[in-house]
Each structure stands twice: as C-alpha cells, then as structure tokens.
Length: 153
Ligand SMILES: CC(C)(COP(=O)(O)OP(=O)(O)OC[C@H]1O[C@@H](n2cnc3c(N)ncnc32)[C@H](O)[C@@H]1OP(=O)(O)O)[C@@H](O)C(=O)NCCC(=O)NCCS
Picture 1 (tube, helix red, strand yellow):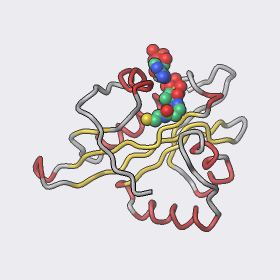
Picture 2: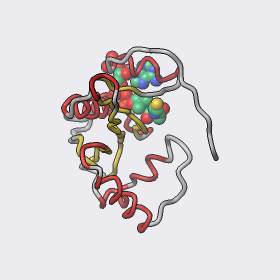
Picture 3: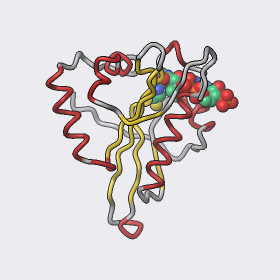
Picture 4: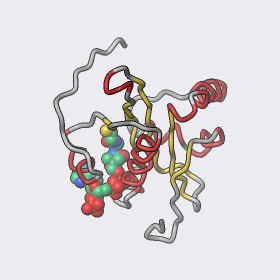
C-alpha cells in the first residue's frame, strides 16, 4: 500500500530487531509499558515465537523512517466446545499518532483476522472502548455482550 507521501506500508510479523525501531515506544501510546531491557525483550520474544501460529504479533514498518508505526496481536485459544474449536483473541492494536487515518489500523486488523481464519478459528473477538467502536465496525466487527475484568496489579 502507498502512503500519502509515497511510503510503502506492509504488514509483517514482529522481528527481534523491531525493539530498536520504536516498537516499545509505540506500545506506550496504547497503555502503561515500562522500558523493556534487551534481555527481557529477547526472552519474551522467544516465548511468543515458540508458540508459532498460536500467538502472532504483527507490525507495519515505515520504510522511509525505519520506525514501527502500527502493531497488533492475535492469540489462538483452543477449546473443547464447538467441536474442539478455536477462537482468536485480538489484542494491543495501536497506530502511531502521526500515522493514524491512513488505513493502517484496518490493515493490521485484516492481517490478524485472516491469520485467525487461516488456522481454523470459528470467530475472532476483541475488547475496545466506546470511542473505538466505529473503527472496529468499519473493520467488520459488531458489538456483542459486555466485558468484565478483575485486575491483580
Ligand atoms: C484506533 C486506531 C487503531 C485506528 O487506527 P487508524 O490507522 O487511524 O485507523 P484506519 O485509518 O485504519 O481507519 C479505518 C476506518 O475507521 C475509521 N476510524 C478510525 N478511527 C476511528 C474512530 N476513533 N472513530 C470513528 N471512526 C474511526 C476511519 O475513518 C476509517 O474509515 P474509512 O475506512 O471509511 O476511511 C488508532 O486510532 C489508535 O491507535 N488509537 C490509539 C490506541 C487505541 O485506542 N487502540 C485500540 C485499542 S482497543
């Protein structure tokens, strides 16, 4: 896809080198994300990678700046119900404040949704704020029920 100033935006899976391309700083635009050491990053990257297709984090890199400008993840939950069905859980969607409105969020959601479908999920779900509801509707999602949460920290 061509950006408004000719940038080339492609969705790909997270790589180890993305830590030095602003990946953590991008997540900080979403929520609390303290600085992550190189070792912490490598350890967590290894854990996630070992899950293969069951946990995918994708990113968009701005080829011109070399910065990561969008990311999102999908986790595949294996169930007994629905004939031992699988559900994709989409999490941690964020587009850099300077890159919003260029369809990057939509591209990320589409990549993660396609992944969930391709590994056999019967549905894909996510939680969002009211402000982001219209965005997800544009991505083909519809509201269903409510979210409950209990935080431990
Ligand atoms: C929500 C977010 C991911 C959207 O990313 P984005 O790249 O700006 O969105 P896109 O450009 O792909 O938008 C796709 C469509 O949704 C619309 N849209 C995007 N955000 C919207 C919003 N908050 N309200 C209404 N419509 C919205 C766009 O206008 C566009 O419509 P179109 O297809 O008719 O042109 C981005 O604003 C963001 O990172 N926000 C901060 C972090 C956050 O809240 N993440 C979500 C956690 S659940």
